[in-house]
Length: 99
Image (cartoon, rainbow, N blue to C red; front, side):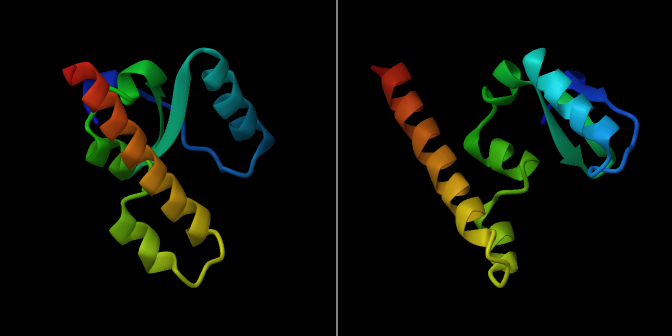
């Protein structure tokens, strides 16, 4: 992800009510909050989806090889599905843009 598009957010517990409100408020503003190695960050959603598929999956921690390391967690099924769906949607979008 291009760091110039990143807006730092104070580190907060992801389970706290304040953090939940922060994520939902950012969504209303057209941002997506992701967890980075440096902590949570808000990124403009339209800009976020402009990056290559691998960048999106990396930033969302949904690269197939990452998701499959959690194969014993029942949540892995939907995480893996999200990875496949994002990849397919980006592929279809790119094909339409080429035409």
